Length: 127
Image 1: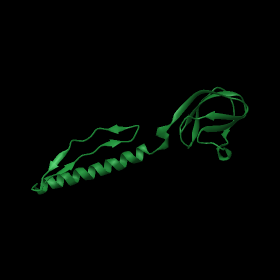
Image 2: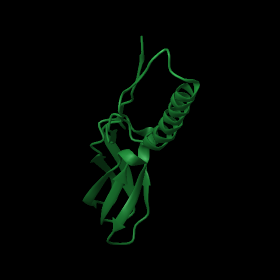
Image 3: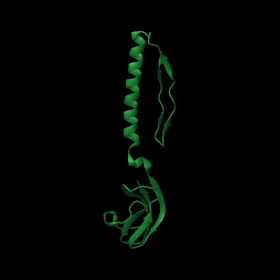
């Protein structure tokens, strides 16, 4: 009886094609067994590398364009459908000190709470 070897990777944002399935019979030579061991080791190492890359929350970010901030507290729906990890201003059309109030927010799974020292328009990357 033989063994089947194959692999499918799917991480939501990235999908990798299925590798060809090979048959290794019990009467296989040592060299074939060695090749299969090396292939399995390679697959394990690649899986580890891709998992560490795709687990970064910055890859699952959204840019909120042309958000109008007024002076004071602003409540912005971040649309991530999960708890907000971080944010950064990518564009701003004026001078303002902007900081978040997430540590005191009641619902950071839905909203980003920002305090602005002046009325400005910004683009914000949320992740």
